[in-house]
Length: 375
Image (cartoon, rainbow, N blue to C red):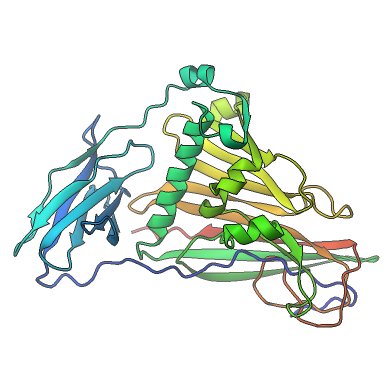
């Protein structure tokens, strides 16, 4: 516990890791199952980490699993019936849903053969706009395609996290307090199991009303809370309508094989907003990174003092996952001690303190997936 004499970290929501309902497989026993493989149609190679989904006849999700390094999957069914099987993999085109009828015995489906999502970038760039705002965004042949790719990638990554596989992670929270004599730095390390999206936001409609940062109400405590984007927020109609999107690729991006889709507020609304980037792989349109920064903060805060980023990578046997995330925000002048509550900007619950409108420090949290030990 660290309590500086004149400074406290302002409550900053560290986008808490929420435990999501997992859709894991039950014990096999003698239950019927649907088995098969997912392969690359071009080369016949297995697609490790492909998401395989069991749906009922109405399209409701019953089970999810991840294809093994050999491309194999197995879905246990609740009872004999007709089921829908959906397969998706980042970097590959969508495969039509297959209907499987299962009776008293397990069945094996033919291989799901997915076509690589080849991007003919020069042709698409020639047809697309460099910048679009509001309703025109999704209609643009380039920006619409890039945003749709980002949405599909985020959807699949979130679904992969819900499968029930345990992903160990480590987080390091560093708090730096600036005083007249010396800077005070404290770092705390925590470990756990990533069971959900590491950058959880709040209801998009609430964000539309209050913005991406606000001062806490008296009954909540003293300080400021910051919010970031997730899948629901980035593709909400009001967010698309209220932001301009553009794309770019400089020499370094070309060498790295990525293209950037940038977004920024269309106009000032009196609320804190966000800008940022979706960084996509040029060849497969896989999402490499999501970046955001808070805009229109109070004038005493330096530009770029709050925001975050999350990087994604293909993990063998596990599919695409968030592998590193960083979240940061300023600490403002106040006369309360430091709380250990794990919110983005750490909040005091003292009811009688006020914020003095002066930045006196910074909180940074960096999280990483811990790779499994070598066999």
